[in-house]
Length: 260
Image (cartoon, rainbow, N blue to C red):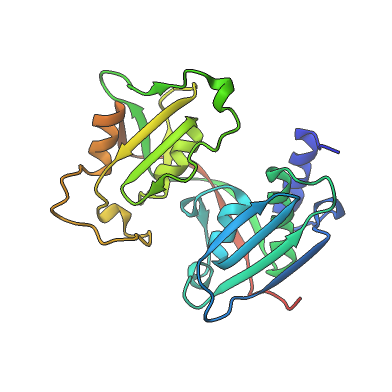
C-alpha cells in the first residue's frame, strides 16, 4: 500500500528524532565492514525494494539516506567520511510492496539509527553558499519539447563525470544537487526557473573540485572554462558567493556499527 505524503512526513520525523517505527524497518538487513580487496563503491536502490551499499563510506550512505549532498551534513566525525579505512557493505530488503525510493530512504535512515546509533536533527544555519541566479540576459536553458516522453527518465542518467554534465528532463533541484558535487559550497536555487529542461555543461575541474575524487588530475592547460564561467556562458546563469540561511542535517551521535 502506498503511503500518503503525511505518513511519510511522520516517519521522517520519527527517524530524525531517533525513534524507529516498525513500519520503517527492513525485513532483513546486513551491515558489515568492507573487505580490504573490495573493488568499486556505491549505494543503490534496487528493484523489488532492495538497498545495496558496496565499499561505501558512512558519509556516502548518509547522502543517499537523506537525499542531500555531503555539504548539507554537519557535525560528522572524521571517520564518517574516511573512504580508505571506514567502508561498509549493506544489503537490505524491504517488506513486500515497499519499492518506492522515498520510503526506502526512510528505512535506510532507521537502519543507520539502529546499527550506527545515529541521531541527527535538522537546523537552519547561516553559511557560505553559491546562489544560482539568472545572468543579466536571462537563462538560455533548453526546455524539454515533449515532457510526457521523457518523464520518469533520470535527470542525470549516466553522462555525468569530471568536467562534463549531460541531462534530460532536468529540474532545478536536480541540477543544484549536481553542481554541489563539484563545488566547495552548497548551492541555493534563486533562478525562479520551474520548467523541465535539458542541459549540457562542460568545464575544466579546478581548485573548487578538490573534495571530489576526480578520475583525472586537473590540467592547467585545459581550454575549457572554469565551472563558474561555464555556467554563465553556456547556461545564462551565474554562481554568486553569498552567506544565506540553509537547512543542514546535524549529526548528534554516531558510532561504528554493531554486529549483525
